[in-house]
Image 1 (spheres, rainbow, N blue to C red):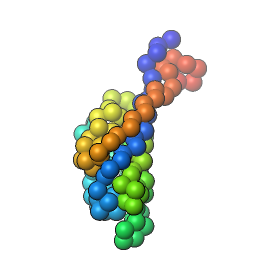
Image 2 (image 1 turned 180 degrees about the horizontal axis):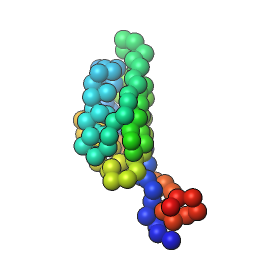
Image 3 (image 1 turned 90 degrees about the vertical axis):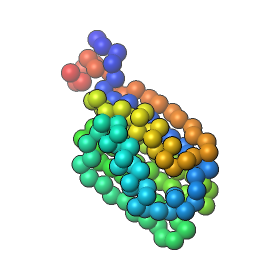
Image 4 (image 1 turned 180 degrees about the vertical axis):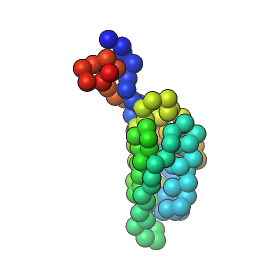
Length: 123
């Protein structure tokens, strides 16, 4: 049995992000889209929702390789990001780019391998 994971899941907590950026739906969508493409993922669809002036954004990119999602709190300078990718796509590449583009003052990263190849039902 191989110990190669089926996918990689990266959770980001981004602190100290400019409040105006965290409320800018178009900017958030562009950052996540760029991150997906730079990671080698293929975007199948997107859904983003702004909660109004001075409020946050929630959004998701549906990827052929899984997904990237975000929820922002401008009033706290905080964003929660979830990057899950399989195949040749590089979840950590996407996660790193998101943190850099949003110029987070502090980034907490949690990474998890998901599913082992060769386990029953994984091929």
